[in-house]
Length: 131
Ligand code: T46
Image 1: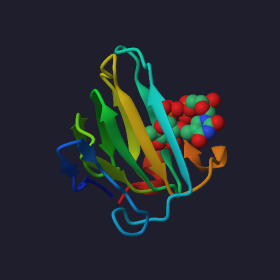
Image 2 (image 1 turned 45 degrees about the horizontal axis):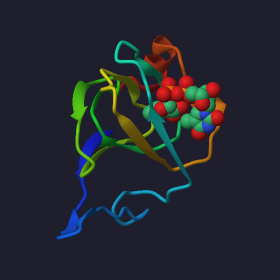
Image 3 (image 1 turned 60 degrees about the vertical axis):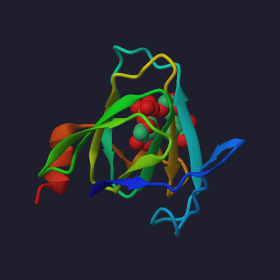
């Protein structure tokens, strides 16, 4: 499953603030945060799925495109605002591309880093998650 999530902007004359609370604004407890920046525009990142990890991707500066594929449906999202994110549950193939020079992709993750959770072969992914 994947879907866009909007976050309320708390703005006033000083500028804007967005607060994201685990299990309230997003459907899981946040156990890890990482961010991706200074990615070349011709590079494709990701190219894997996760067995159990859930994540929310937010492009807090600049823009990038995310292709997601749940073994039934493929869709591409443009992330270009800090006020919305893309929720990607387990069993979804993802590819991140077309990073702008100034892109900072913030990721909120439901689990600590675990290499054994990655599925890096597309055929293995289809075999495991095809409906
Ligand atoms: C995902 C997409 C959206 C760590 O040591 N700890 C971490 O928490 C992470 C995420 C990565 N790393 C190391 C592993 C590699 O040596 O950082 C290096 C780059 O990671 P990776 O090649 O997996 O990066 P991406 O951009 O292809 O994928 C990442 C996440 O790994 C992945 O879970 O869904 O962002």
